[in-house]
Structures are given as structure tokens and as C-alpha cells.
Length: 278
Image (cartoon, rainbow, N blue to C red; front, top):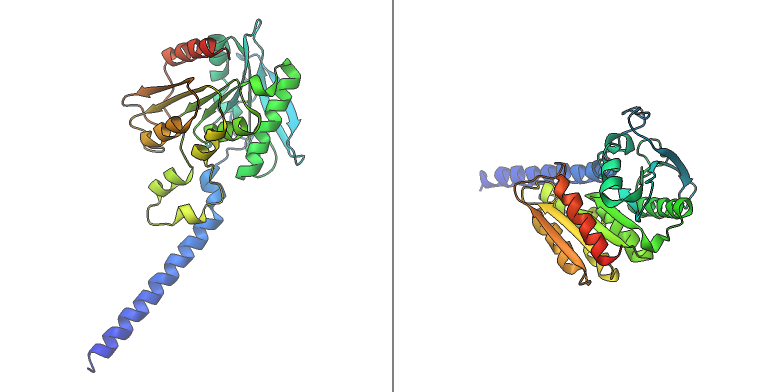
């Protein structure tokens, strides 16, 4: 008995210390969630005046007045209008070279912009405000081109697909193009931090698998089988939840999350958009 009591106190004290450490970790992760979800590169990074690209600087404001910035690429004879919603680790200057590829393959006017906190856009990102940023970009594009917001093609990559689905739920779209998309943002977060209750604590949730059920329009999805950031099954789950018959899913064997899509992808996307009249 004299031996057991100290052991009990030891284990009880250890359990209390471990619980305290775990709570401190939870508190820390809650505070840094914004940085983990939106590791936004600033305007000091990247080339903002590339001489080989022809574009128009786009300046507009989100619903709460936050200034936003993007690049607009005009096609000489556009068949459609595209709004590109990028992933969480890049800004406009990082992906400018991709926009002429999209414009040429899809015969489209293209706007790519930065969410708040990214590049030359002001503010700090959080899910509802980022979605409002997308809606503001869509409105600017409609004014610039005359293409109604409900007819624009929304191309979203990774977290950008979450923004695209949320926008399509609210105002429709000519088509949603989802690249390496998640069903819910909490799913890849739970995969990355299995020892944390992220599904309970996350504020940025992007429940795309629920939202897409309220969007009846065309959907073009793709995913790599070796995606270690967003599991292939999550992209497939989002695709299956879409209620439309006008949808297509491309599987890229051996492809990871951040690898560039092959030229054939854009050709297939162009054919799909022609087929559905987007």
C-alpha cells in the first residue's frame, strides 16, 4: 500500500500534465488555423510585370469593401468566360503563365484574382469572406465582358474548388471545373492531423459535398491517384454527390496534388464545355 499510493499520484500527475499539454496544443492550432489553411504569399513575392504576358490589371472590392486585385486576359474572339480560383499556396503572379493556356484552349476571356490576404489584395482570409471575394470577382468579370455570372465557367483548384462550388450554389455557373477537390476541407485536415479533433474545431470547413447538391449544372472533375494532400477518394465523393447528369471525372494515375495538368486535359475540358453549351 505505501508503494501504490506514490505510483497512483505519479500517474495521476502525468495524466494531468499530458492533458494540459494537449489542451495547449489545441489552443495553438486554433490560433494558427488561418495560417495553415491560407499560407498566403504576399505582394513582395513574384514578378508582377512579366514582359511576356499581356493582361489588364483588375481592381475591385469585396462585399465588405476589402480591395481585391487580379489579372484579366482578353481573348480576341471569346466563346466563353472563365473565372480561375487558385489554390491556397499561390498568388496571381505565380500562375500567370497558365492563363494564356486556358484562354487559348477554351477560347475564353479569363480572370484570375487573389483572395483577401494574397498578393496585392487586402484583408485577411476566412471562409465566408473568401467566398464573397469570389462573388465580387465574378461580378467584375460580368461587367467587363457582359457575360452573366450564371454563365461563367468557374475553374477551381484545391481550395479554389471549394470556393467555386460555394459560388455555384449561390448564383449558378455555366460549369464548375474542380481540380484535386475535397469533399469537405475538414477531411484532408483530419488526414494531416489525425490526433486532433479538427472536424469539431475548424472554422474554415468548406462543406462542398453538401453545397454541390444545390447546384444542378455541369461539373468537370479531375484527381490524381497519388494525391497526398487531398485523397483521391475525397474528390470522387464530391463528384458522386453532384446531382447533374452533365458531369465527367478524369483520373490521372500516379499524379500528385501540385503537378501541372497535361495539355490533353485542357483539350478534353474544351470538348466537354462545348458539349454542355458552357
